[in-house]
Structure formats: C-alpha cells, structure tokens
Image (cartoon, rainbow, N blue to C red):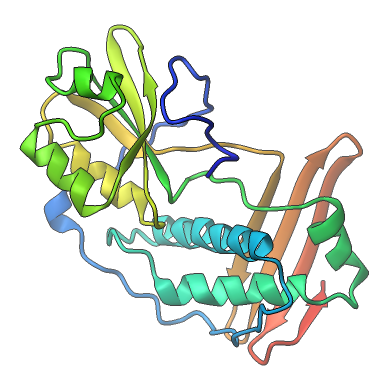
Length: 245
C-alpha cells in the first residue's frame, strides 16, 4: 500500500479521513451471503505484468468492501467469490486491447479505485493516557493490552503510522490481506481508552464503480482531470464478452 502511506512511523501526516460509526456489536458479526451476482469466467493473466494484476486485485477488494457495506454485511471476511468475479471482470477489460477506450482507462489515465473505504487500513483514535501509547509511539505494534493484542495477532495487523495528536492519539493499522474493515474496526470499540475506529478513506482523482444484473457486470471508470470529468463504461457478460457502453 505504498501509494497510500510512506514509512512505518510518521507523526502528523495529513490524511483525508472520514469517520463513520456503525451501531452494532462484535458479537453480532455474522456472515451475510449474496448469491445473486453473476459469476464471471476466469481469465488467464500470464501475459499481464504482476504490477497490474496486483492493482486490479486491490481494486476488486475495494469494490467488494463497498458492496458488503451497502448490504449491511458484518462478516469480517470479505467474499472471496465476489472479489474473484470483480477481478476477472477488470482483467477482461484490461485484456480487451481491441477496444480503444480500454487504452484510455488502463494505459493513458491509469484509472483505479479510490480506497474509500480502504479494505487494508483502519485508523484508531485513543486517549493519550492509554497504557499502550508508549509502545505505539516507539513503533512497536504489541501493546501488553491483552484484548488489543489479541486483535492485532489474530488479523496480522502492523503499525503503519502514529499520530501525536492532542489531546488524543491516533494510529493507522494495516492488514496484509483485505478484510471488511467496517466490521473489524467496530471490534476495537469495546477496548477501554479507544475513542473511535473506522476504515481509512483516501480520496484520489480516479475511481471505479460497479453494478450487476442477472447476466452481466457494468464497470464505470472515472477521473477528475484538468480536461474535465472523464467517464468510461464497460459491460462484461457472464460468457466473458466485453463491450463499451
């Protein structure tokens, strides 16, 4: 996630953040399955650079998290099946070299999803008197607070950024794999001294949106540029066919 954050330990780094509080409890986090979306066929990525497939998988995770939030899914695990389907759709568009608009999206403008919300990062705000503040100030992820350390170890969290705010403190915790960061964030709210926890939101000048019907997915690629607002649309059918719309 180097495009979002630089360095393991920083103070006072300005990040565009929107705090969202959901009224629910960790004990209520139950998987919600959405079996209605059409599955898109797997696509070979042997001729696609790893740097591109990595970005497309991040895009797929961001869009999957948005779908989970929209349908009120409080499972901490994101749907792997939906991530794979969205990834297949994006990869199909990337490989549609016969479409001129494909070059505009993938090559010229490099349009990817804004991590808003972010399935890899949560931001935690806590009281400066918390017992673990010294550990986090020194860049140590484990705190000695059993409940907090249990979450850190269970979900393989790392400390990416520390904020020396007043009167509270803040930190960004980063995941190795994408999760439902709305659900995971709420688990931190039961810990004493924590004021707030929520997914990080970083708004960029490009984004991707997706919607589906029974037989296809529509993908919308947008960019706010000096030339104005750019919008490109593609439809990927269940049989793998793709066309601009």
